[in-house]
Image (cartoon, rainbow, N blue to C red; front, side):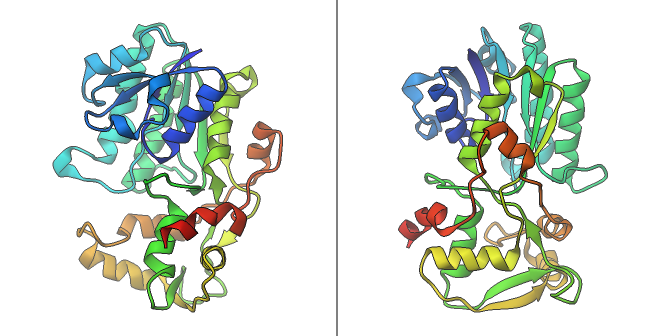
Length: 308
């Protein structure tokens, strides 16, 4: 099967391309000029140079394909470069839907996110509107809403690498975020899910008519608190780390002043979503995989040690 992939050169996209090729599919990727070297196994893919705003390039990427995967998402905007939630997470979906419909493609797999909602943050709302649009267009749609995704970033960035860099490696206590004003009642929780498991879920869905029309919340085998995640990252790199409780409200106040700076680690909206929690039952993931999901454990975090 030839599969058009949008967002195939990023963290998840590289694993997705690997999984598609291993399953015998032929990926057709839209790639920003200059990002060709970020594509996994590029020699086994059809590469089309362009971006989501280039209608001709998008149409070329889907031409002759049997299915479309939209895997584009950002965590922070860069309006000066045209990288906004609206452009990347909604307008791009509309553009790809139009091109796919014109080619008679009926199968559409969409990467969304756990916790999307309307009303919500711009991140959540554009993801939710994208889901609504794809479903309204009459495609045979499958939507995935993963919790936080971890795994060897291969030069990109993911949750465990970022926490290691920002909180575990520095010679300072790490911030144990919690919502409200009592740590015991406001624990931030997530269900970290491995990137290879997410990629395999997409491939499984491609070959399974039973997944059409379904929306899957993908979570790993455990729901962990923010503090537990920090502890496991520290254990994976052999460090003992003091973790100090920090209310998200205090961090949000700081972000109000500084989140416009590129180096500030989180935005106000990210903190708001963190307070809402990001957990998911592992049942859906394990049903798609036909095996237990991969745990957020030292053996599976060994790539962090190479980062120093």
